[in-house]
Image (tube, rainbow, N blue to C red; front, side, top):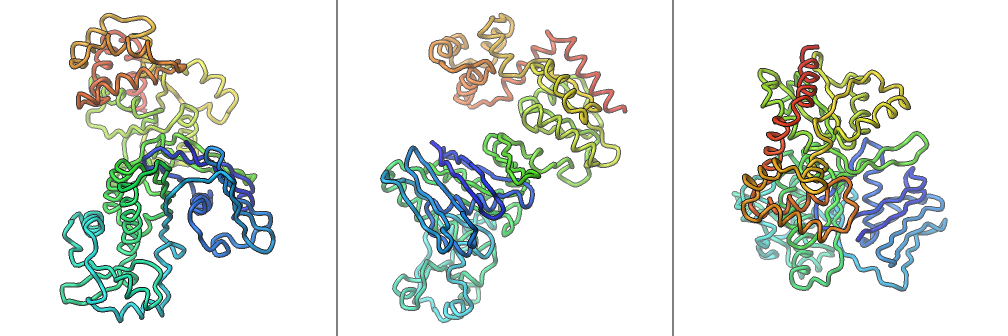
Length: 494
């Protein structure tokens, strides 16, 4: 299921369509400044959030925001005088909330100075202890200590209503007994309290009565308010909540720390083109999104190797170790997405001098596209100077399907069946795949999914299968292994 959105004439975006997957999980929308990330998120939040449309979007001529979920539609349009909302007869069932790190955020509803001064008049008798969900997770995320905010309180509803407050407001009691209101807390504390309060309400509803409707959360550039360690803990926490109550959580971000915690299939990279149109790259690896080519400690690398995906990265790492290539040299292997993305990034890196002085660049693609590369480069002359080599196999997924399903390789089958698939026979898994799979599986991904599910049930992971396959190709694809090894060694010695 997807939330399909169409935008017209909003904040420099002439026309743009985007589909938000509603499967549970964490997603990221990223791109350079001005690419449309925040506009996309704020427009999407209007599907369930009644925001002040003039403040967010102004009065753009012929502006439209349209939504569709399984035939149920909702739209906003500016008619030249006011923003109007329209809904289809079929009710659109969706829940969620929206939060951002700057002044339009939901938590800023009660932050006029007059209201802040009013909050200072509250005392402990006007409050009650905050719930454990908010207290524990606020401390865990910001300080890695669930007890840090044990003296956290919430204003009673009756006391808040008497003074005209529209939403829950928190207070923190200091060691000296002073009461600090939420607007006077740090930006990170204020932000997290707003998110946790909304999540607590949503979580309670979903656990008590989940009617199956999709639920989506939009968070806009919240990294501006959080330290990188707190941001990582927030992502881990949100992953757990998303799994628990079936949430789709979308970030707009350019934080590398955040992107590293999200799988490439859930990252959407926006590129604003010269004609004003927006191109979406998905899947997108963090390295491609951030052009992060340096060591995490800032000292750089001796060589950077660009590959298509993280499975290719694992294969090259193991070949380098087995061939003793990586000794006394600092190498960074970066998955960047599809093979055209990898070549494009290699060109960007070299033409823009993004590498530290003395750092070598290598490009290794999956072998199955070897025949397509010459034509691609002949049509893109700027890439002609890039030296490319290939993995000894087409791709891990294709290799496994080719050698275990299309034509059984007895030696590889026995190795995997003996050393890895000890809970359930490999032959039984292959039979199930042949019997039940109805998809076009020319890329081998469906078969690989069958194998991976079985591996995970044994509390093992994909590295275990990569280990065995690499051992096998080292023995049986010696010529191709040596070609790749020679290419990497020459790159190091350039």
